[in-house]
Image (cartoon, rainbow over all chains, first blue to last red; front, side):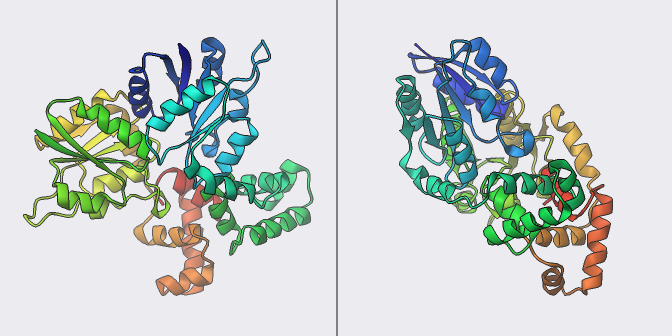
Length: 202
Length: 202
């Protein structure tokens, strides 16, 4: 039996997906929201964690780091993500967190079953249709520092507040904002936030 | 038999939800994305259209108006929406479009079956847990004009571009932006956009 933990923030969808997975005789399925996921990882110790990359909290950025922390036996959980090609920033985050599997939500649900079984054997699984998303992710133009500045700006922080939070001068923050606007091909600060959120970088 | 059209932008979730609904002997289920929905409404002529309010296009705002247009027989389609209490702007849009049913995605999938059968009889269906969302929707502080200004700003338009699009003076656009920032309790323009998007007003 493959122990699966399904992580999805919409209860209705999660329940139906879990019920659908339970029709497979080789799967033992638990399910939870992102908020409950780290706790369930510890209690269920799944062979595969299948997680939707859409997250209702923390401005839509799922806490992948918490999910992928090695257990007491130092074994890293095997992660499979449900993703779309048009949120390359989320694909990049999943790759950085060490996800083994990438199932395209624009494809057939059979991919999810194939992915779970492949990951359970310790192999990789990537839907071809996500290729363009990975290409875009590789081209993500912003540095980690620039992303920090932009994230604070997107939360509504002023230049002074951003400078205070990151221990930078006002001028430096302005320079970062100008670089971000240029690198994202945006018309202005608000446009840079819109573009970056659309790509799933923020 | 109740003819149901299921509208959801994620193919994987939509397929599994449709398969789950097809287990019910009284439902004949078709499914489509938001982009395909207006065409399917015309060809399927469903008794109930069950539509997820999350939309992948047009900045996340679903084209509810197109979905609810009366057919050649002048009969308005019966619409049931899958919603969450924390996007009151989307609830408000669904109510304005004349949706009869409101199923909470944070609740049990059985609500969807109950909702479909109720709506098919021409009755209303609202999950109690969405109550707070409707309350927040009723308190939406922005006028239609202010929303137009803010929508353009959120797309990255400058004051001059907004003024040009809406045939207003620069000073008037600045006044609108100041009123919007004050009314949404925001710290600045970016914060006003963030708050309004979070509420599903934009």
